[in-house]
Image (tube, rainbow, N blue to C red; front, side):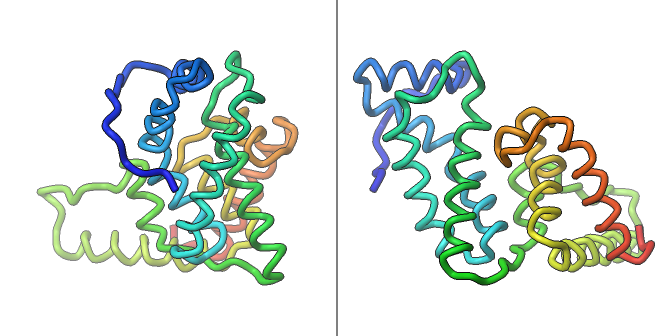
Length: 197
């Protein structure tokens, strides 16, 4: 639906400023939003619904809805939680329609989007590298065993680096609930790991 066009990318321009440009009739500026959010939202959706191909289809719906409702967006607020909230709602609707529990995507895929994947230290021994890989695999498996709520909250907080305020807006819960939910999710992950970390 959204084809790639040549749009000047202003790296320092805020999302909110881009939205204002689109509202003023500079329609192609919306490609900046697509460019900035396409990969992150795709992995976020895939993580929630457990199906990469479906996530890509859903991503198009997210961008269409975001575009259609740009007039409703309050530019005094941050854009990122707003578009993540649309993605969250689309994923929830998809899951409800199919009445099945989502599965998890590769944990490495999620980590990769945030640039937090740890490089191998030059001084690391083969044994240390193996242990690190084993721990990462353990985390991926453990995350897959968590319920949807815990997987989502950990992904938003630690792999997409969202603030508590942003998480509250995306998930639609009070901000003071976010901290307790993150804490419960971390405990659940550690319990599932059985003390391996």
